[in-house]
Length: 285
Length: 270
Image (cartoon, rainbow over all chains, first blue to last red):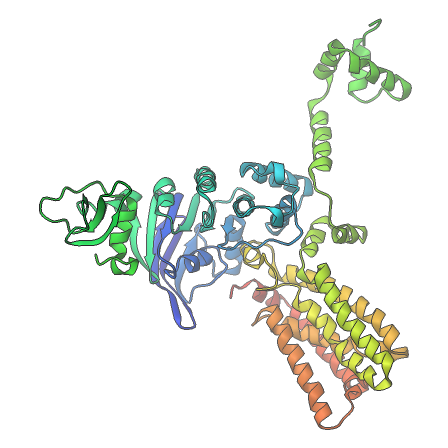
C-alpha cells in the first residue's frame, strides 16, 4: 500500500521546548490515531502535516509531494482537510456562511456548485437543521461538527483532525466516531486523541508519541498485545503491580509483573499504552 | 371536471410556450386534476425542472447576507470576495466603533484649542495602521490556523483585506479630518499614513501583521516624542519634506509588496 504521509527525522523546537525530536513515520489510507500525553508533540506533528508549520529539520512527503516547495504545498492543501485543536469561528457567521467561507478559501469559486458542496458536508455531519443558526449559538459538540464539515469540503484525500472528540459528551463522541469512521473510508485520516477508546474503536493504525519521539507504531491489537500476560485481577493491589486501581466490582485491576499463581486477563489498548509509556504515564513499567 | 388538457396543451405548457391567460387557466386546472398533472410530469423536461428546483433551493436555503456583504456586493465586489471581507476582524462593528471613538476624541480636542490640532495630526495617520493591524493575522483572525491550511493565496487574502480596511479607515479619518482641520491640512496625514501601512505590509514578511503594525506605530510615536523633546513642532512631520519622504516610502513599499518574490514569500510557512 502506498504511504500517504512519510516523515523522516522531523524535528521542531519552540524556544526552550523540543516539541519533536526526530519523528519518522509512514502513514497509509485508513484512520491512524496519534496517542500521547500532553506535550508529547501530537499537535505540532499534525500542524506540520497540515502545512501550517514547517519542521526545523527532517523531511515530510505528503500525498507524494514536498510541503517545503510552495507549488507542491498548494497542491497538498487542495487535497487536505484540517480540523485544528481549537477551531475558531467568525463571530456573526451562520453555520452555512462559515462553511461557505472555508469553501471559498478552498478555491471553490463557482457559487452554485460551492453552495451545493456546502449543503452536502453540512448534511453529512447532520447539521442541516441548524445551518442558518449563528455558530456562536451552538453547543461545543455542534461547533466541532461544523469544523469537521469544513474539513470535509472538497472530499479531501487526507484528513488531519486534532483532538476531534475533546470536550464532547459520550453521546457526541459516539456520533463523532461514526462520522470519522465514515470519513475514513477510502482516504487517510490522522487524528490525535487522549482517548484510548477512540483509537480502539476507530483506528486501523496507532502511533504513540512521547517527548517528541515515536514510541510505538502498529495496530491497536499490537499495542494492546504489549500488555499480554501483564494484567491480572486480585482482591488487593498486587505485588509487582506498577499500576492498580479498584474496579466497580471491588477487585483490583493490576498492571505489571504478575505474581506466581495470578491469572492474567486479556489486556486492553489502554493497558498496552500505560505500560509502554511507563513512568511518563505514572507507571513504573 | 368538464375538460382536460389535450397532448398539445400539455406539451405547450411543459416547454413554456403557453402564455398569458391560457397558462393561468392551465395552472388552475392542474391544481385540481391529478390525471393532467400526471400527463404534465411525463412531458416536462427533467433538466429544466432540475434547474428550476436548484434555483429555488439556492434562493430559499442560502442564508441572508450580512449588511456588510450586501454593501460590498452592491459596490460590485464579487460575491466570494465579499464573504472573505465580511470575515475581516477590522471591519466588524466593534473595531470600527473603536476607531471612530479615537477620531471623535481627537476631533473634539482639535476643536477646543488650536494647539490641540496637533493631537489630531498625530493620531490620524495611526488610524489606518491600527485598522490594517486588525485585517489578518495570528491572534486577530479566529480562523487564522484554518486559513493557513487552505490553498487560498495568503498574499491575495491579506491585500484584499488591507485594501478594504484602508479604504474604510481613510474615508472615516478624512471625514473627521475635514471637521477638525482646514484646507490642505485636512489631508496632511494621508501620505504619512500610507507610508506606515506600506512599511507594515513589508514587515509582515517576517512577523505577523498585528506585530508589524505595532512596531511601526511604536516607531512613529517615538519619532513624535523625539520632536517634542527637542522642542520642535510635530507639524514638521507633515511639512513638504515629510510628505515627500512619505511618498517615496509608500511607493517603495508598494513595489516590494507587489513583486513576484514577495508573493512567493507570503506563501511560505513560518
